[in-house]
Amino acid sequence: VVNWFWRRRDAIVAPRLRPRADASSFTKVDLAELTPDREQFLGRAARVQLVHFEGLSKAVAIATALPSKERLSRAAAIALRKHHLLVAEIERTGATPATVMEKHAKGIEYFQSATIGSDLAETIMSSYISAGLLDDFFSRLAAGLKGETGTRVANLYAAESYEKLLVEELAAAISAQPHLEARMAMWGRRLVGDSMLVARGSLAMPPSSASDEARIEPVFTELIAAHTRRMDALGLTA
Amino acid sequence: VVNWFWRRRDAIVAPRLRPRADASSFTKVDLAELTPDREQFLGRAARVQLVHFEGLSKAVAIATALPSKERLSRAAAIALRKHHLLVAEIERTGATPATVMEKHAKGIEYFQSATIGSDLAETIMSSYISAGLLDDFFSRLAAGLKGETGTRVANLYAAESYEKLLVEELAAAISAQPHLEARMAMWGRRLVGDSMLVARGSLAMPPSSASDEARIEPVFTELIAAHTRRMDALGLTA
Image 1: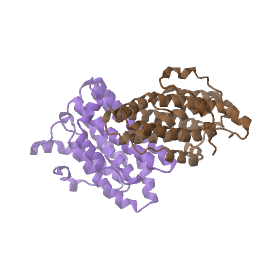
Image 2: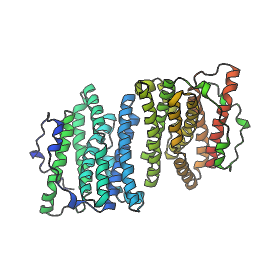
Image 3: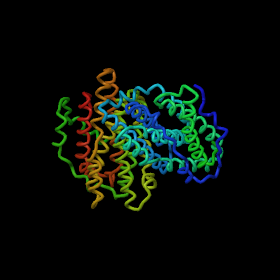
Image 4: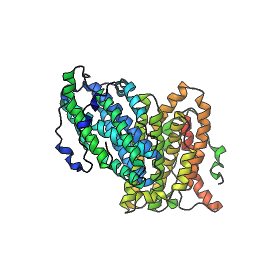
């Protein structure tokens, strides 16, 4: 796989102290033309959200401090609600959720194995970076879903986020153990690469020509910019 | 610790084909006099429910079949909702949930380590047997909580149960791998012992005299009878 989405990386400015409120100033590029059919979208989004839940529930289990367990369990509950709402959407189509999700097994299982953290900080970082990027991506891609499904899916992504819970946990961990900083910066770069592969594989038609690529590039540039802000919120260089 | 709650074990009849609907015919013995104060009850019940969630989410993660993951994720969501409702009750008292739960760390962490399964079937069995017994126990013990707290806590235990989801998973596993039967029967016996220790340690006043013991015994006899029905539903001897 060509790491095409890294091509413009040098052009991305990563100001370390940019206010997070800037997020809304980014123009959202329309992904609607690249949205796959409803069943394919929902199967993939639901399967990915289950990975997020498994990561967060692993973090709950390996955290030893109860305040951390509590915060992480809130995040896990949010991921699980999103997953079950997506599964409910699959059920509305009359299809069997497990069957529809199973079609995405190969890519998603690879993604999960590549992004499993080896300790608590890495595990939380995986959820923060990967779920952050992919929820962002699927929420944009939902613009291309027709009718009420599109509205409901957009709403379920917009309704709740665990980003704040995770950034609090991570910032506390890094501040308590400064040696984590370099490792988390490196881990974050790996996570964004694997997450982008999942995003790219979710498009209706993988770009095959230079003009296709050119059309998609702004979207991925925005995803990378959002990623940079997430890293920035931890004081890490993207 | 004396396994006093085994004393009457020989007297328990375990009919293998007893209809599960019989459950309601058992007389519920009043535990109200043994209910600890609100904070102690809630801290322990919430901490135990977090163990149930961790067990179920581990089962979600290690299950490979998506239909199993789906069923188990429903069960995990139920445990997590109960946990968060109990935590909300602690917050209503003005106390900090983590602090209140922390007081029960020692016994509960031992319980968790003793009841962690070594594979998927054992992990699900742990939730089925331990969470079944302990939810049953705390729901009875809640009768002694005063005012609206008691009502809300009783309701949260009564509202949802994952027993049916788990028994379906386990019955399918045992039917597909008959060699599991003997191991699950043995594991179930160990689980009931560890769960009963947690239940006993939750009483306001550990029985110190023969008359105390006599007062509590009917409750534990009922818990064991309910346990026997759970084992029976899997075709296992308790």
